Length: 127
Image (cartoon, rainbow, N blue to C red; front, side, top):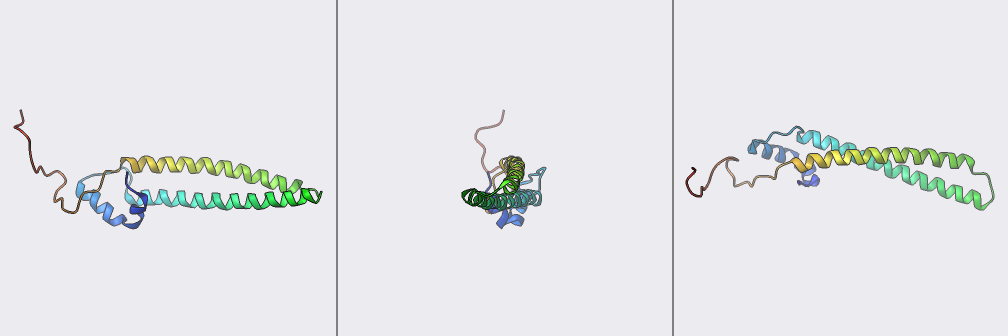
């Protein structure tokens, strides 16, 4: 499987390599990078929501420690939990979709290879 970091760093080089190989994919390198960007944005949002939920949970604990009402904060934590669950499911689907595409990508040709389908040696005669 190609490393997504390599795809991010050198998308043109990899697309040229695929073209040189004569390999056509249902997803171009740009499409793969778009999917990866969406996945990264989802991860960032998920981390921000988790941070917000943790902060609210600390506030709830502080109010309960002072024996104050925390119902409004608890409802907010509940809504955040629902959003987190939904976003986590979406992120898992996006990650699986991206991995599925990455697994189908071919290895890169070495720079020394002149043509993708060039026969260099042949063992025995073909029947």
